[in-house]
Length: 174
Image 1 (spheres, rainbow, N blue to C red):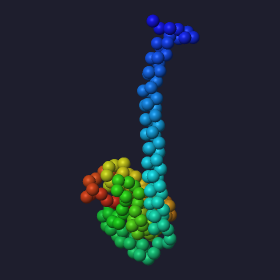
Image 2 (spheres, rainbow, N blue to C red):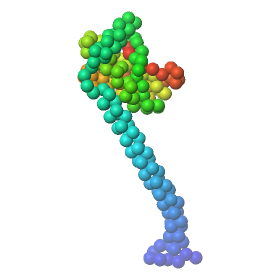
Image 3 (tube, rainbow, N blue to C red):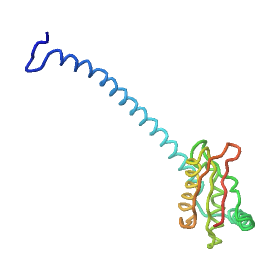
Image 4 (cartoon, rainbow, N blue to C red):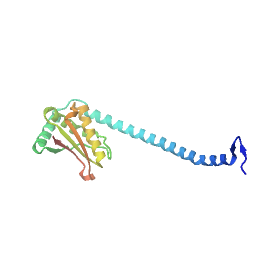
């Protein structure tokens, strides 16, 4: 028989306490997971910041005559077929983080766009999946806008998924 304690049955309080133990354990587990996720996100953000600084440093400065020559070659290829592959653009695996080695190609694209104000482009990036491809195309566009003073309205982006041996970046004249 349950004893009354201030209007509550003692048996009911015991059942409530037993039910609270799993909820507390679940709460503790969720807090632990949230702390771990936050630490991982912070580490990832730090790596991305370092990569961004590297690409920013590689893209800083004025285009050289080498960039202009590469830009002219891109223009000739693009104007011939309306599409060309932008060789030399590289990303960290599975991400949209540009590697510093991408700078010469991005500068060449920027030089081409500066020399030919009438050109509008679509950047098509083929990545691990459509979302990665789209993020990569957008990263190239943002590098052009930020470092090459390209008008964002002149550049569209599109992402596609592709097997590893088919990943690339293509420029399509609009």
